[in-house]
Each structure stands twice: as C-alpha cells, then as structure tokens.
Amino acid sequence: MDKKGIKWSWTSALVGAASVAAATAVILAKPKNPVIDLISVDLTSFRLKFPSVEAQLLLTVHASNPNFAPAHYSPATVSIFYAGSLLGSADVAGGSQPPRSCRVLRLPARLDGVKLAHHAGRFFSDVARREMVLDAAVDVAGDARVMWWDHKFKVHVDSRVTMDPVILDVVNQENKSQLEVSYLW
Image (cartoon, rainbow, N blue to C red; front, side, top):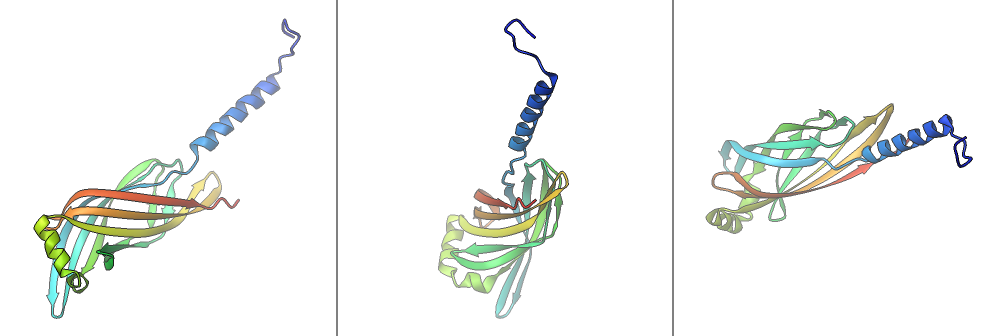
C-alpha cells in the first residue's frame, strides 16, 4: 500500500496498458481512402478505319495505399467520359498493393472517335482553348487482410481531369474516392 491507502496492482497496470495499446491499434487501423493521381497521357496509336476512328492511349497513374494492411483487388474498368458521354475505357489488371506503399500503373485506354464526333463543336472549341475536361469513374473491389481476417472492400473513384488536348498534358485534376469496408468477422 502507498501513503494514501491505495494498493498498487501489476495486474491492473498491465490491463490498463493493454487497453491503451488496443485503442491505439483500432485508431491507427481505421481504413483510409486510397490516393490516385493521373500523371500523364500518351497517345500510342491512332487508327482511321472508315467510318470509325479509334485512339489508343497509355494512362500513367500513381496509386497509394495509406493503410496498414495490404490490398488485393480484382480487375476493373475505368470509364472515360467527355461532355457527359461515354468516350472510352481503360483496363485495370487485378493485383495487390503492399501496406503504406505507392505504385505507378500504366493503363492502356481506348477512345472511340465516332463518339467524340458527336461533340465535334465542343471538341474543336476545347482544342482552340487548349483545355479539355474529361471525367472518369471506376469501382475497384477486393480484400484487405488484417491479422487473420479478410475484410472485403469496394472503392469508387470519380476523377475530373483538365488536359491540354494538343500536347496531351495534364493541367489539373480532382479525384474523389469513397471506400466501403465490410467488417464481417
């Protein structure tokens, strides 16, 4: 006993320390949204087969997993929109990303020139201004292993990219992601 008549207990101290450690682990393990940025757009081919036109692009994307668990994800397709119309798509191969890491992905994309022709007036105006706005959306599903439990997740990413259509340079971008995690034990 100490001077005030309170009995010191190692058991109580250990339980208190374990409670603090568990609370800290729960706070640190709270899932965070991934960070995705488009770095560059490269034209790889342009085909004119009357009556269609097709452009092949290579999108270079920087993806970060800020979480303490590795993420394993399924293949997905990025939908690319111009003026509200579906213009093309890019494929994301399934794979995994280690915890608290970043990775550069190269995504092959296909754009349909006939669909772009429906917005020819706006497109030529954008080329003259050297500013074109594209929207993209993707849903990526997968699982993250925390200790011995797999947690299913789904990430929805909406991107708005402003680019120079003459030199295919990314001028500005805004990305919003929404993460849903299933905590089924």
